[in-house]
Each structure stands twice: as structure tokens, then as C-alpha cells.
Image (cartoon, rainbow, N blue to C red; front, top):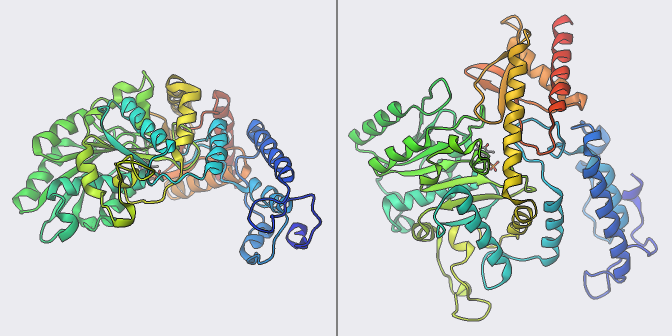
Length: 494
Ligand SMILES: *Cc1c(COP(=O)(O)O)cnc(C)c1O
């Protein structure tokens, strides 16, 4: 790699640090290179459709990263950037691409990209204190409450993603069940029990684990044919735990399950939780923001009644990674779960240490970045109607793919389509059928044409296609299906 060997004493006109700081000796050189980077990234997004969705990293690239040594002496920024362009940018997962249809990932957006640059310049620390970035985050939380039909005084905080948001919810529900004293004394002899469905994302179990409750204190309730939690089984499990002297404290409903995109009967769960005195939390990682689409909103009825909702801006709202959110109806119990004030974080009535409560009072992080800027700029630039149209369009594409699968004799659909996810498989003899789907998915990924992923639906290996990216069009379905059928036929023949 020539760039790795550039001598540290390379002659300037490039970037060189001033003798007394990390700023450049020549700001103009930084400006020129920075403009070049911006132009290149705009070109990347503008031309993304013509790239392969994903390509495997060549061995040399992997070797490059695994052997690079710690630079003691300065390098030339222009060659560091060349290294980024040749060794990083071509080998991304590809979720910015319109035919990235694997897992459930957002596609980012150009306004969010610019916001990341602006946030980087300000280097704001959103742990707390009295500055405008804190107000931007509070506004984003207030808008989130509005989008999800929560009261305007609901509390919330931006986090890395729904995994952390679910973890926060478990801790808040624990505080509600045992009182703030649990923060001093721990769980003691209390046997708290939480409930979610067998279709829930694994991060719910991890949240219960990280909260110190042990995964065994999470009951996985069976689902109906539409992959929704069965309320009769839930009620029976709660009764059984109470009879055994355990303490049910929380139910986690799903608004968009990870495998098939099912939405639990949130209204019924909300009634049941109120009746049983349980905290009702919703994992709405991608599905909660379907509230922005008039066509999908009725499916989410009951979401606004929850005690808390975890969701991601980096999925259906297309905010660049990472941006998740926890929203809690009762701000007091939320703050009572996390707030503490060591002397060095004293709150003052005036000056920079004012303006409490601070974001750090609502989650485990102290220092935090300015995620709120990219959320605010994206919402403000596109408007929620447009983002809702993206959601609706993804669901139209999913319905269209389902129709095409149903009409294709070689294919078989494996789950109903409630939102944006279609699970299907290629028909094949029973002894090869599961391995075949995994091979097809890997073949299609390696072709660069599209990225579907796999999952297991009721014991059957499925090709899973999730429509989340705002760039995906109906013609992309043709390319995907052609690639899947070609790969499957080739495998069955060979
Ligand atoms: C993506 C997802 C999660 C995890 O969210 P992260 O942002 O990746 O932490 C949880 N639940 C569901 C339903 C998801 O789709």
C-alpha cells in the first residue's frame, strides 16, 4: 500500500499540524481537502444504485487492517483519506443501497450525513449543562412523544439503539415495581418476572440479563398464527407466577417483530397490563415509527397507551447510525431510576451548570454525542409526512413481493406480511431445503445484486426480505427475484 509508506516528513501543501496544537498550520489546505471529501461522499450517495450492494473484502484489505501499526509519527491527511477511499468505502455492508434488504436496517440520508459533519465541528457533550444542543435533544424527545401519541411531558433520551432503550425500560420498570430503594439494596429476595413473546428480539432477554434479573425471569409467551403474543397464555403465565409467590412486573410487547414484522395486539396488552398492575413496555425498534403512516397507524393502536416505548431513528426514519430512543410516560419514575448528583456534577441555579434535569438523569451515559442534531435536521428538512410515505411505500413493496412469491410456483411464502418483511423459500426436496435457502442468500449477496438475509420461521429456514431503505423501488423486486430464482435453479441443477 503506497499510502501506508508515505514518509512522515512528506512536503506540505497537505495537512500538517501547527507546532502548538492539533489544528492545521494551513487552514486552507484543510478546507480544500475537506471540500474534496464532501464532493466524494455526495457522489457516493448520488451513484449508490450503480454500485454492488456488497462485495467481500479482498484478502489484502483484511490483511491491511489486521497488520497496520500504531502511528507514532505524523501521517499525511491526504494519504489517510486515500486509505479510507481504497480500503474502507468499497467494503461497507451496503445498507445505503436500494437493494439492501437484509435484517432491518435504515439507509441513512444526505441531510443526516451533513448533520454528522456539523455535530463533529461543535463536539458537543450532551450529558447535560446549559447549552442549545440540550434544547435540541429535548425538542426531539417532545416531537417523539407527539409522533407516538405520548403526553407532551413524557421523558426520553437518545441512545445508541433499541437494545439500550429496552435495557433502560427494564430498569425503569424495576424501579416502579420495587421503588427507588432497589438502587441501594438490589433485588434481595424479590423474584421479578417479565413477559414477552417467543417472537421478541433477543435484546429483550439481554436487557433482563443486564439488569441482573437473569434470563430465566423472562417468560417467552407463545404466539398465534399471525405471530402475535397470545393473551390467554400471557394471563395464565402471570397467574401461575403469582400463585408461586413470584412478582410479575413487566410485559414487553412488539410493534414489528424482527423475523416477520408482526405487531402484537397492543391495545389488548395495554388493558391487560393496567388490570394486572404491570409496566407495559413496547419494543417498537422499527415498527413504532409506522405511526407516521396513515395506512399503517391503525395496526399500532394501543401503542400510545404504553408506559414506555423503545424505538430507532436509524431504521425506518433513515437517520444515519446510530440513533435510538427511549420514551417514558412518567418522567418522575424515569429520573428516579438514574438520577444521582455527585459533587462534580452539581446543578446550579445559573451559569453553565444550570438547566437540569440533564439527559444523564435519564440513562446510564454521562458523556454523549449530539445525535439529536441529525434527528432534528432530518425531521425538519423532510417533514414527518414524507417519512411516513417512506414507511407506507416499504409496506406496498412488501405486499407486492408477497404477491409475486405467491404467484411463483417455485416459491413458497412462510409468514403473513403485516408490515415490511416477507419470509419465503424456494421449494426443494426436504433433505436439502434448509441448506438451499442459506446458499441462495449467500449466492445473491456475493453477486452484489441484492442483500436478503435468512431467518428461521417455525423451524423452517427462510429467505427474509425487509423493506426499510427509502431508495428501494418496485423494479428492485424484479432484480431480487431474478437473482434468487437463478441462484436456486443453478443449485438444484448442480
Ligand atoms: C433492530 C431491532 C432491535 C435492536 O435494535 P438496535 O438498534 O439494533 O439495538 C430490537 N428489536 C427489534 C424488533 C429490532 O428490529
